[in-house]
Amino acid sequence: MGQKYITINSRRLPMSLTKRDLVVRLSKETGIAQQNVYTILQKTLKYFIEALGRGERIEFRDFGVFELQTRKARVGRNPKKPDHVVPIPARAVVKFKPGREMKAVVAALSAQNQSVSPTS
Image (cartoon, rainbow, N blue to C red):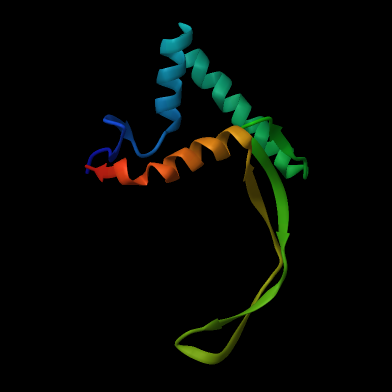
């Protein structure tokens, strides 16, 4: 199974951006060795995880904000046995709120959805 692509304005782009893709692209654009870019990216992601683990908010202007949100405890039910109640405890989840620039890019894609066609 290969990489899936999407065509936007006659440009063929991958449908997902992996850490490896990011390392290769940053290395090419900056001239920094891939191993050094990888190390920096790994440390950056580690710092994000540590900050969220402390309950801190991570904010990048125009990109977006990552923050913790607590989901309330609730009662779930097995669809095959509706009388069987399953308690679901409260838990913390990471919430992402897109920033101004990201919202604008996504809105532009939505407006162009006629010219967007997924391909393999």
